[in-house]
Length: 276
Length: 287
Image (cartoon, rainbow over all chains, first blue to last red; front, side, top):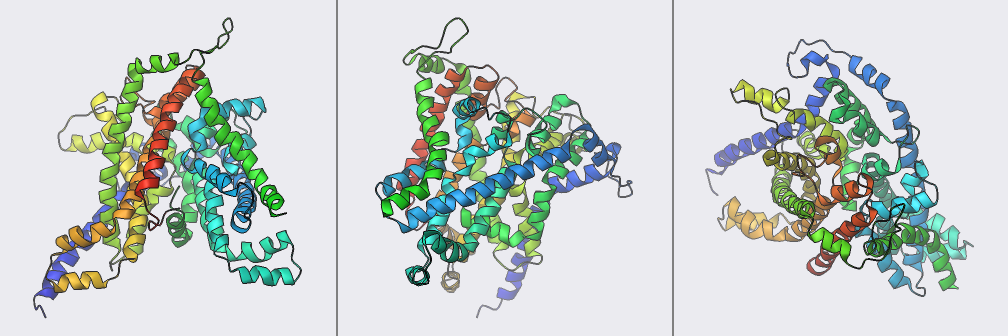
């Protein structure tokens, strides 16, 4: 055996640990800084002092200047509407693709996959026109509608359903289950991990989505957090820096807390899903 | 019977997909062939006139070149960082889950929030970067107001946002590489750099391709930060194609020109879709 291995390994090991931590600190610094600015009075925003007084005034000020609670409520309604519709629509479509070979199924599936590449935000111009024709501009339903039939969800669930053993379906049929009975009692329960992964990715995507909601909304009653924050933080709004940071943290807090609590599931879901 | 069931199950999704993906794609192409309608003169068929206008539009070329620089500036660096991050947290390390969390956290933040935070770093004189620079006696600089530095500033921020996201794909790939390979390489006396260069990196190639295509797509789809940071300015120095489409449609109200620009974006995406189809084989753990 190589005798000097332990020593050289140690030096290298220490260097690597140092590099890993240095990079980690660098990566978390912007967020850590946002926390610093949000919880201290404005004059400490660029003035670091461990004894600087902590305060919640920035949060109070942000809440009094813009209806962030209403925005948060809108985001919550938006995200849950989209997710509910996606789960239902994608389950049905994926079931059709996974279990039935029907006339035109291959072409239909290819056409579904087109949406993986051409996402609704690229077609903002035409989709805005469509919504205007149905008088859905400035509604939460209007923001959600283009995302409800998700090619990505259909694809993921189809994969999951395809790996379900046929014997289980046959057994369920013998027990007297119909088409939907089989789906509900056999396929859906076995695809639970896929549903979890897809759900987390969908929630974080739509919580963070900005461009399309910006185009569709123009009132406090429909605007999600990201759009509200975008208007609030725009340079011309002239709002104090510490207050903007407080508003920013409030907007990301629910997702950030969920992430910290369910870190493993989040990372695995993103990995599993392979797309935002 | 299965035909009926199949289509019945599919119908709700198909109706929405056609309304918001296929129909608008076709409508975009048709609209790009019509002139901008006004109150007096209705929109009429003009053939390729919009495209001629586009080719002569210096802003169009500017945003296209910006997009190219944005892609070149963000993608290789974030991929290299992602590989480094994945290698660092793939082995035992004190506080490994904390380190991994630090790398990954930017991924779950909305781009708007990220831009809000970074806006302050970049603001002239009072911003954090200038404060630190001032401490070393370097004068203030208007990072986002100077055409020379605005795009690099946005690139740095985007790298910060994306590297951790790409890291998880490399982590997944690394976990599938048998440890015997490193063992064997070590017995052969190869250095770790040699092992990385000749064994690990080639094995990670499918992941790299997958990440690369996703990164290119993102570089065209992600413009949220421009709304907060620069509005495409100064003098379009940070403008990107999708943001220019938004401006044309919703600031200048020229939906037909916006449609023409969208056709270019659709064309670019189609090329990437084909590349993905041809270059990535089934072994890649994608989608």
